[in-house]
Length: 242
Image (tube, rainbow, N blue to C red; front, side, top):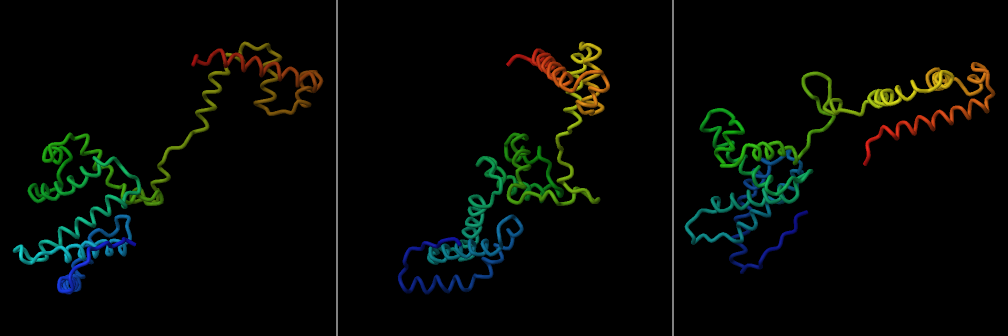
């Protein structure tokens, strides 16, 4: 809930302000509804809009020559935008991007009315006298209020956005290991190469390898330990210095 801190008013002023608030509740709620589906609950938005309406009613001076609506609408809109700026970002970009995004939103409306089509980023940048890269960066941050769900469809088909995210391919690691180990294994003695193939390619047990090459299981274990130590030293020699 948004806390409301108001300056006490004289009885007559309070009565007039309360009447202004009651007669313009629908206006505040209507303004709040324009910001729905942007990541903040409509109930919270309505509360912020009513806070803005209350501030406008308490501060309004009828002797200034302006009607209440022309004073209240910018006040309510300002409260809503301030609430989004302070509370609405799921992923908070830099403040300059937030400010630029608000200017871009206004510029897009103005340019679309003039051009009769959505403006290009270069046209928005020229209109705002900003660099195209900054405008593009701010426009891509538009989803920070409500990021798109990874379960949403990536198009007309059944594929979701989450399914398009790249993942680590274990085959790449295996290919890299083969490239590094191939020249080292090639330098081993013929019997050692055979033992390596039987153990790591054909996946035989040490006892099965011993029967194949005519050694005891203990001897196969010592041979494998020596081979692996040699391969580790060889890989260490190939690694670049830190």
